[in-house]
Length: 284
Image (cartoon, rainbow, N blue to C red; front, side, top):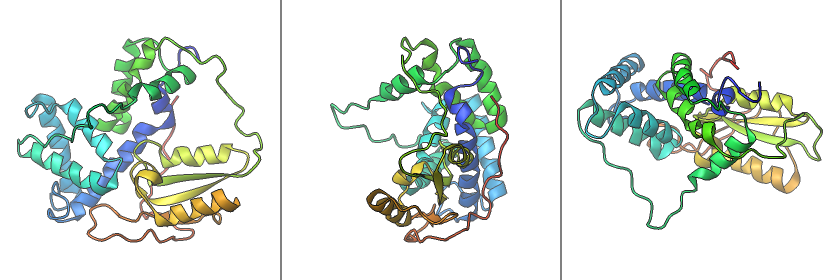
């Protein structure tokens, strides 16, 4: 029901599921790396996942200085957006907390910098339906934690302010979304995206009248924040000539996680990551 939806915008998009898949890859690849490459590595993916779970239990019981469980989850989600250097910084943060040390604080923005945080809320809360009853968010916290783990909780509270947002867009577009467009649409999405899941990109591409999905075999949020020379070449070609990549074409990121040297983002037609996430059931 549009007036009182069961889920928030982010949960309908599967952002919590995208974060859960990305976190699993972070722990797997960290566990495969030596501690010189990933500070939080416990020597294997399984041991590193167990170490992470134990750290989360510790933080729920008692914070490390000002680092509560909630702050750690929130910062970790943000760091996973950026493979380089975010993933290495995330590993160092987790290792410091594991050892009972306070991680270094993130650099403060320059004086007078305006982050524009409420701009996203103005769009999401006024154009997309979200629960208006505050108690619903506590229920969704448990729901998303059950289906997506620790990072799922962060996505629930991302749009809690929509419950009391005072404005609603007067002329928001609600579909249909399969109307023919003047030109084909190019969609680009990493396989493991922390915010916009790959499954959601596949679903959106299939619903549009004429669109093609270019798969970025990589991690983090968007190809803009995690550069790929291959994606850039396709994007420039698309914007200058209208040419789409061949169907099924894929690209790689220039700098993979925990890597000493960049790969150059070489394209790999028709392939995919060996352990790409299986489609998850959608709820809501």
